[in-house]
Length: 350
Image (cartoon, rainbow, N blue to C red; front, top):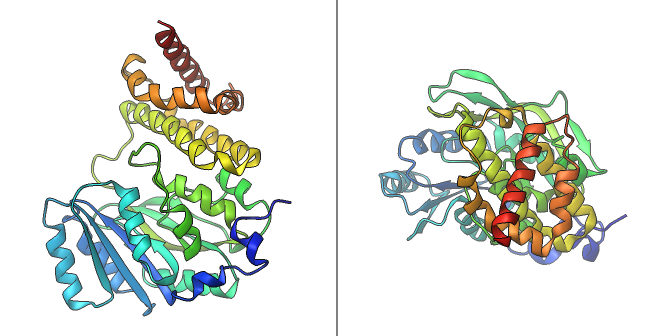
């Protein structure tokens, strides 16, 4: 059985002793913000109202051009737990979060987006479960709501509290833990300090969370899921999926797959097979079977570099992705991938 990262060096210890010296009790909550003046007030109200007192709130202003920074400053004046990191240029959500992770001082780290709502008791409940069950990651339920709080349905929900001690990474890659997002989870700090600060070969919004979680769940020895719904995912106007959105999402998944292979190839075949299964499962989502309104040509330029990277550096992974995508699941997506690859190859030869 493979030994996992820092566990190999520190036996059954959950956190490397050298990292415990400077970490404090409690939870650091990291909130990246970019032009978030319409939503950040509700998010900060929800986190400031948490029952857990040992909170560190780190807001990373990713070069906002609206009133976001002024709102953050007004909250920092009345709540000493809130720290502001101001970036001079827009670097994207992943690198903004990474700056927050570097400044976090607590033994546990959680995340919120700048329009999320943390329901009362969220972080106290997550922390209590993490400590009592000696977990590395704890996951709660999340619900979808409108900006005015109207319930739209479950985003993630678990029927009961469960401990996962075996096949944690495989379970993550099979989507057994629901969404790959960061915002409904609590992590031991060393996990995200290691995997949440790595630079990615290509940057794109919307796929960073899963890419960070691949590393975190690879190293996690115990994951706990809770039945409580403690997080609200606010569905903003214009978020309904369209055929264009589906095309863009497929493009992002293919690029994210290439980034994941680049980041984690050194972990070996077990990791690569799991990553392939993860992105195969994402490509099989029904939403991506919507009719495409445009041809392939407009995607070739964006896909050329990541596909060429896979073909040159890790050709077996692209073949494995196609081979492990059952035709009966999403024949349209499989066919499009094959066609994109063929047309890119034709263009390269030409």
